[in-house]
View (tube, rainbow, N blue to C red):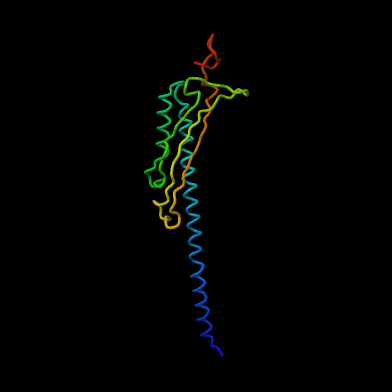
Amino acid sequence: MRTGRGRRSGQRAQAAIEMALVLPIMIVIVCGFVGMMLELRAENEFQTAVDLAAQATLVPPLGDQAASEADSAYAFSHTFNPYSSESGYLSVTTPVNCEGPYLEGEIDLNAQGIPAPVTCTAQADLDFSKTPISIFWFWSIKLSTTAEAYPSQYRQCQTTSGSASAYQC
């Protein structure tokens, strides 16, 4: 016949074995959630930087490509700082590059009268080896993002006689 003392020590041993089996699985699940949060935060920060760079290209006058590129680079570099503590694991592989008819001094309108957008793209690598969860996430993820910005209806050029397009400077 078992005494109460033997039953309690058996239950303790069973609890210790259960904990030894469940704890590693829980740690992996928690690290997976932390990794996904880091990835989503980095993607959001990177997308925001490219969005603001696209919007900044529309600030200089129509056709001033050098000023548009400078404003775009400034907005991108001051929004996304890869050396800060928040995004030290994200490195830009292809800097922001913007294209569109607005940069060449034209505003092309589609059938609905909406001007063609300025499209900016950039690429980066998300390197988990620089984070504490590198034990479980030891690979890097390539991020690629695109953003569009539409010129304002009020920034269009005035029509000139003899012009091929009513909105060409």
